[in-house]
Amino acid sequence: MNKKSEVQVDEKLVREIASLARLDLTEEETRMFVSQFKDILDYVSILNEVDTEDVPPAYLSSANKSVTREDEIEAPVATAEFLKNAPQSKDDYVLIPRVHIEQ
Amino acid sequence: MELHELSIQETYDLLSSRKISSEEITRAYLERVQRLDPQIKSYVTVSEGVALEQAREADKRIKSNESLTPLTGIPYSAKDSISTRGVNTTCSSKILENYKPFYDSSAIKKLKLTSAVLLGKNNMDEFGMGSSTENSGFFTTRNPWNFDYVPGGSSGGSAAAVAAGLAPFSLGEDTGGSVRMPASFCGVTGIKTTYGRISRYGLIPLVSSFDTIGPIARSAYDVSLVLETIAGHDPKDSTSRVESIQSYSETLKKAENLRGLHIGIPKEYFVEGLDKEVDASLRNAIKQIEGLGAEVIEVSLPHTQYAIPVYYLILFAEASSNLAKYDGVRFGLSKRTGDLMDVYLKTREAGFGAETKRRIMLGTFALSAGYYDAYYLKAQKVRTLIRQDFERVFQTCDALITPVSPTTAFRIGEKVTNPLDMYLSDVFVVAVNLAGIPALSVPCGISNGLPIGMQIMGPHLSEESLLRIGHLYQSQTDWHTKHPPCWNK
Image (cartoon, rainbow over all chains, first blue to last red; front, side, top):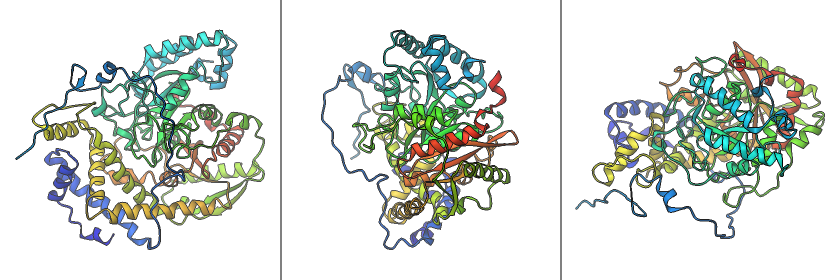
């Protein structure tokens, strides 16, 4: 957690994260996030106080093991009903934006 | 007495003796919603057509006396993150504004099987991110007790609907207090269930390792009727608990006192910053519980102060992953412009509100290379310590009592400009989700016309015992029978 104090929260970092998160932030949002991120990251740094040397992480909320179930066939969803939620469709398919590959 | 004033059991008694039909009671609720909800704004969708159709089905079933339960023919509403086939399920987000699921969540399916009647879907903070419903992508729900105040969040619409007599019960969802806090702010009873006790199948996820569905109603008894209907193992949710469920309402009918029960009072929850009136109400309530025969002891949960940072770090990380699927490709809002990357960027920028973006950003950061160990992993380790705190106290206690919130409801607008301040209002509720344990919120006072809530927490799968404590407390007190001014309108 010591790394935290080294984090320089500035507009450059916020823009980088926004790009990773696929968010096209406005200038105003970018500026607002810079100051709010500083506050929030400062606040969570309180966890540095806690010694977690031999503590395992708690990933699961219950003691359940991985479970399987019978693969039973149910009535399928009608294609037309499924396609009602698609932004665009053609024939029986979801129409998606062209995948553009930059050279 | 007006129809909306009846409890679930009273309504069912009238239905099953055919003094009234489900259609009549459904119409009465729909009329009330139409008249009062333009001010309270607890519903984002009113499913009138579906409701009347389901009510007529219920009436047929009652007429032929076909496997009835106390929820047959009873209207209800559900938080808008719980999938309802053919009825808009938006999570109060513009990105899902016109989304109609093609399947029912398991909880809704169980209510359908007993012919309960869906009135509509309740407003919430977008995807459950907030403590006031001010982060809804559509509008802010008002607290029925005072329209200038928030109803709490994120299941604010559910709690406000129940408090204002716009639904006898509602299904809420609790990720970090989202059932308990609004229940407390609106003076109704709500339970955050053990993680896995109610199937999450069809619940649109916020934080998959915290999310739980939980009913909100007007009494612990009414909550028990709903819980015993929707709880239980579901093969469609791999984290769902396999243990069988009890008939909670039968237990409550037989409950007499709390003799032999040990109730812990964690000292970390009665500290500076706790409103004086909230403190006094809680101490009164604890005396009453003692009067019912329980033995009260002070205990300590030493890692309490770390619950908020741990909760938010894990939330940011899991929420940012869960919300990656809203990309404008297969469903939901889609800004079809430019190439694929432009579609992603424009869709997500237009579809998500400020708080959702903030949390996606923080989660993306916390999970990014170089910071994972420092934030996400560290939080998961401290989460283990918080869980161990609870395991330790539950060796000597059957339940713990604390306030739900350090204050009563706050004013609309008071905390929107300061997200950190908003996060801190969750201080007493998030630890329960970190540990995956159940907790009940029951009304225990009123201060300046706004309700105060008591939180009763217990070990995993102790719902029956928590409801028993809540029910016996409510048999001795009348806080849960007090209603906001709009109740009689």
